Length: 613
Ligand code: C2O
Image 1 (cartoon, protein in one colour):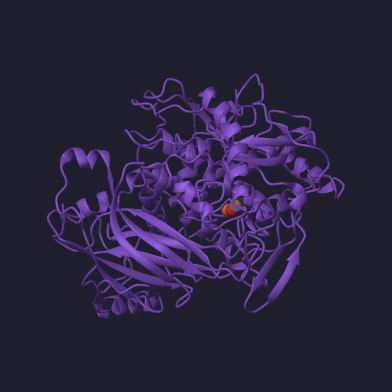
Image 2 (cartoon, helix red, strand yellow):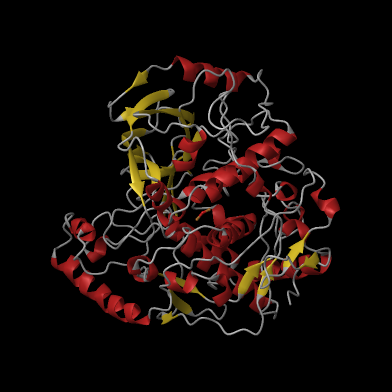
C-alpha cells in the first residue's frame, strides 16, 4: 500500500467505507481546529451516474465525426456563424481538438502599468503524437497532504524536482518547459484561426475543460518526476488548504534552498499566515478562528451546493465556440483566490502564481492543483443523486497534447481523465471539516433559525463596514442592463416559479445566471453576489446563507489582447433560498459587490433559471 504516505499518519479504516483506507493525521496535528469527530467519508454513491467512459461505440463515431466537423467548418470558410451549428442538436460532434503544435505562437502578456511582453511558451515539436493508453500498474499510488509528509518523502520529492530543473532546456520534461505547458494552453498560444475559425483560440480555463486539463497536466508531471528518480510509484503532494492544518503554505515549499521554493511569492503570505480562500487582493483583518470559519463555509458552499456538472465544472465549450464560456464553482473560488494570494503583487504581472502565463513556474502550483483535482474526486463521492460528470461526448472526446515521461508526445482525451484510479493514483484520506460548515442566515428570525451560529465577526472593521453601509444605501434597480460594477449594485430579479413542487426541487436546481460578463482579461477581478441581504451593519461573509458566490478573473491574455473576455456564470440558489425562506416570493434582490477591479466589469443580464445538469 501507499509507500509514499507519511509515516506520521495512522491508517484507519472507516466503518462506512469498506473499500477505502483512510489516513488521518495525529490528533495533535489537528490542534488549530476544534475537536470534533473527524468526518471523512468517501462513500460509494447509491445511484451511479450515467456511465459514459466505457462507451467505446461513441468514441468511434465521434472521433470520425470530429473530422467531418472540421471539414464542415473549413468548408464554411471560417464563418462566424459556424458557432451556431454548435447549439443545433442535429449538428455533428464537436469536441475541442488537440492543438496543432506547428501553429503555436508566442503568447502576449499585458498589464496596464507594465505594458506588453511576448513570451515564448510553445513546446518543441519533436515527433508526431501517439494516442494515450491508460497505464498498467500493480498498486495505486497515494498523493499525500504536503503538510504531513515525512523526511524520506521530502528527500525523494526534492531530488525529483532538482533533476527536473537540471534537464536540458530543450527537453520537454524540463521544469520550465513544463511550466510553459500551462502558459501555452492558458495564454492564447494556440490559435485556431488557421483552421478557419477566426478568434478561435484554445483556452482551458473558463469552461468544462478546467478539471480534466489540469488533471492530465499533473498526471504527466508526476510521471516525469517518478521516472527521474526511478520510482514509478512516486506521487506528488497536495496542498490541503481546505483543512485548518493545511491553510498555510506547506513548510516544504518555503525553504529558500529547496527546489520547491519560488521567490516570486507574496512575502506577507508566508507561514504562519493563513490563506484566505475569499481573498480579493487586500488583507482582511480577521482573527484566525474567523478566517477558518470563513474558509470552511466557503468550501461547504462550493462543494455541497454546486450539485450539477455545469455548476461544478463550468460551461460547455466545443470546437468552434468562442473560448471562455464560463467558469465552474471551484475555478471561480477558491481556485483564483489562492493564485492571487500566493502571487507576488510587486511583480509587473503578479508573477508567478498571480498570472496564468507564469503560474506553472512556482512548484506550489502543482500542489495547489493537486488539491483542486482531489476535490473533483470528493465532489463525485458526496452523497445524493446528482454530482455526475457530463455524459456529453463533446466533452469526453476533447483532447490535449502532453509530453510523457519518455518524452513521447501523447494525445489524451477527457474520457481518459475521469477516474484517478484508472490513472493509477488516489489521495491520502484526510478530514473534510467543511462538511460541518453549512452557512446560516444572518438576519435574525429569518428562515429556520441560526443554529447557534453567532455573528462574531468584528463589527468595527472599517473597510467591511463601509461596504455594508454602501450596500444598504444602494437603490434597488430592475431591468437596467448592461450594468457596470463601479459601485455596489442592487437588482431585483423576478423568479419565474414562485413555488416549486417537491419533485422539481429534487430534480432541478434554481440558479442565478449572469450573462455576458465583460472585462479585460489582464485585470484581477472579484465581485461577490449576495441575495436578499438587508439591514445589517456588518459585511456579509461566506458563513452567511446570503452569500451566493463570487466571480473572479486571474490576469491572463489571449491571442487577441484587444478582444474582451465575454463570459457567463451560474450560481446555485436552491438551498440558499430555502435557508432564507423565500418560498412564494415574486422576486429576489441581488446585491453585487465589486471587491477588486471596481468599474472594470459589466454584466449583460441576470436571470433565474432551472437546470438539471
Ligand atoms: Cu490553469 Cu490554476 O490554473
